[in-house]
Length: 282
Image (cartoon, rainbow, N blue to C red; front, side):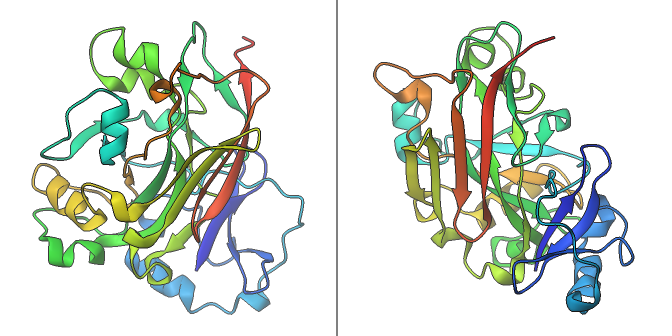
């Protein structure tokens, strides 16, 4: 099932894509997608709906972030070998975990706004995981049983804030609009193997990143199991699983985002995003 949220920013409603690619309004069947409404039990109930009986949403309707809000927005750093190499950092022996502020969440077609003082805006296409059941001390063999679904994420970054201002990476990851998620939350049953998905990001039509999740250092099940040894993952948590090589800071010379550029981001089977880059205007 491909779930989504549609409508003006701040007034989104829950929806789903039917077999003909038509958006259906699920407002009569569920509250907005947020926390328990994307639990495995809640999703099982939605899968029983007759989507053809649900109201049709106009084609030109805005699609918002897949979730209204999340308990946590986690990320895995340097999870593709060649990305670690281009970043001049050692290959991780264990997953590197950091966070983005949940206020960075954004719609898949909303503008990306470069913040005040931005000099090194960057891009990162990533496979996203949404947790569907509270998860603690889970083994790898059962880890995928805790996944509600998957999504496309652009982990937008400001590298000077991230690496040159001291402290943790979260400062360079959390600016408003720096977390486009969607367009769809694709339920786990439609993604039998998350390690076989192509990932791609273009800027103004030029391919910057093109790879496959098969080359992740730590797989989805390893990430979930590992994280659950240190924390309880909550229903609705989003985990961005890392990006392949081709980010701006790794190019020679480095290339950073400029106002007016258009990013397009896709994870195979999970939908394609499109964002126009703009400068902060106050």
